[in-house]
Length: 198
Image (cartoon, rainbow, N blue to C red):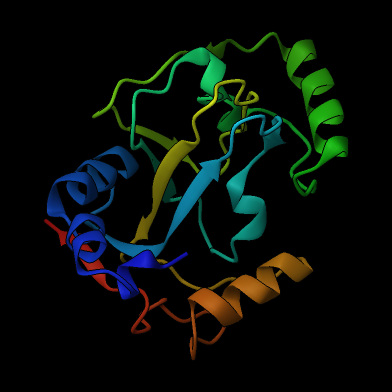
């Protein structure tokens, strides 16, 4: 995580204004800050990534945050691309589940009951997918002999404030990704630069 602090090429990519502007426009905000970046590599024979919503882990005061999911190679169905339940950010789903076997089972049952459309398509190199923090998503197994390489960039409203953490994961996230920021303050730490302001 925060590979931008370790490699200049990654920093130029993560700090790129083009994707940041898209994120701001999708979120309907004047600008966005970086929450953090993350490399997600799924090795050959890597299993299912269970149903979850990222914002369960984030101590953010609003839902104006999103993840750009960027594969670093063509990602066919048998490599385990990102898949999500369309409209699930607005659905009455259990938002208190950490990622795991329980979330996979419980959320699949809830999603089936709501008959939400399941978007599960391969990605070409150069494709980018954006999803809100409360969009429920998963990924299938990687049954190929190559690793599935992905980088994600998490954007948040430039005016985002730190919320009171509601679980241990959010406490850790506040300490790790928002150092020195108090509850109720704008998340304006050295790790959270503004990447786009329009």
